[in-house]
Length: 100
Image (cartoon, rainbow, N blue to C red; front, side, top):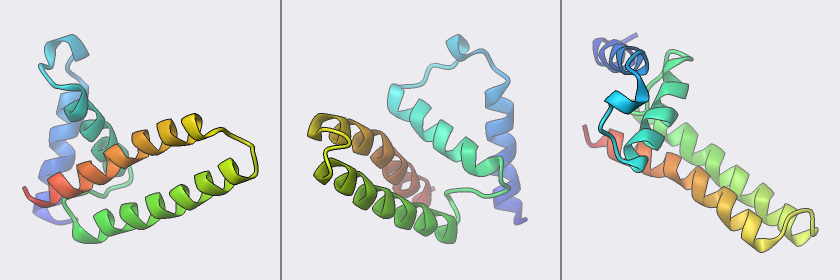
């Protein structure tokens, strides 16, 4: 694991121990921390271009699955759009963390 990745993972481990009320974060920052925290649990970070690109590929695949579910009337358009909006926060997390 790179030194940079170890620092990022440590940062999220430390911040996850602080009560949420003590963190003055926006909803977007909280979502970004959630996405990065999920990667940190697996020894990865979205500051790594390979991990970020893997997330982009996975979200594109999930978008296609949601479009298919909508086309088959398993979910409606509103449900699809809501789920896609939540997933796309992960894309913004990857993009913003790439600029660190």
